[in-house]
Length: 118
Image 1 (spheres, rainbow, N blue to C red):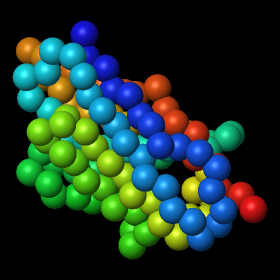
Image 2: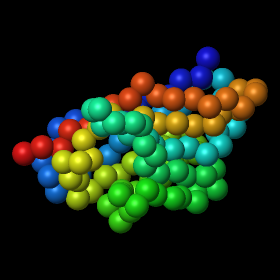
Image 3: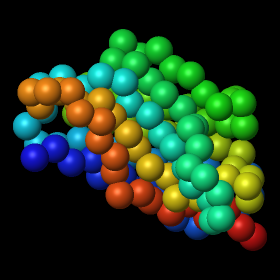
């Protein structure tokens, strides 16, 4: 059974920073692309950032220059370093990954709350 578990969310003041983690566990053959999504209250889930297995990254315009996605393939873990946080970044953040175990399946984590408020 494969699981994705996010951690690192919390309450932070505008302009502050947080680092989210997403750890994959279970019977994993290969982890492909991984990504972060977020869902604010009353809004649809939106894509935040993606990183390929080779380390190539891409970002939504709303977070470009403020967020950095990374991964440690040896630890099956992905990170999202968030800086210069704004109130509009408040949302539940979800991690997503394509994992072969042995067939390729799209997995989601349970989400972690990020609240940016003074």
